[in-house]
Length: 188
Image 1 (cartoon, helix red, strand yellow):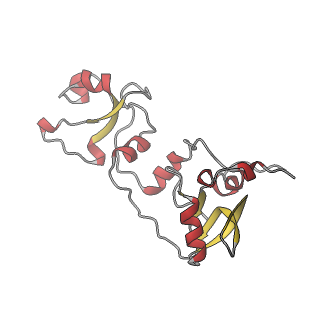
Image 2: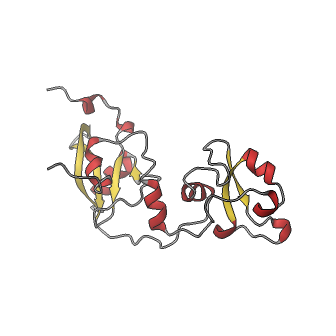
Image 3: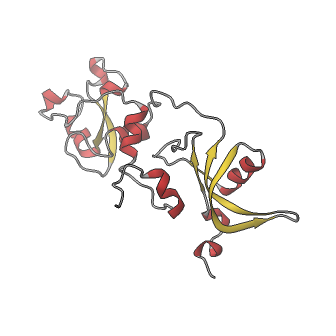
C-alpha cells in the first residue's frame, strides 16, 4: 500500500528529539535533528528510536526506516535560565510590541534608556515595534506617556518553553503529536 512518507526526500524527514524522560528538549525552536544526525546517533547507541517514518535509507548491508521521534539515553539537565538573545527576548514577549501590541517590524527597546544609565538586561529590555521605539526615543515610558503592557522580567527556561507552545512550527509529523501536546484534553 502507498504511504506518503515513501515519497519524501530524506531531507524532509527530521527527527523530534526527546530527553531521556521523554519530554522535548525544547519547544521553540523545536528540538529536531536532521535525518543524518539522527541515524548517526542511532548507530552510536546514543538514542532510542520511539517512532519512525515509512521512508527508508539503505547502505550495501543495511536498510533503516528513518527515525521520526528519538529519545536520548542520557538525560540532559535543562538550564534554569535561558541565554539573553534577541530571539529569546521576542519569545518572552510573545513576539508582540510591549507598547502597542503589534506583531510586525519588531526590534527591542531599553525601558530605561542607556543615556540614563539603563543596561542591556532582561529586566530593562522589551520587545518594541520600530514605530513605537522611534516614538519613545531616548525617554522613559513615563516621559513618553507610553506604558508597557507587561513589565520586563528575567524568564525561566520553563516560561519560555510554555510561550513556545503557542507558536507551533509549520511542520509537525503525526508521530510527534503525542510528545508535544500532552496537555490537551483527551477524548473519552
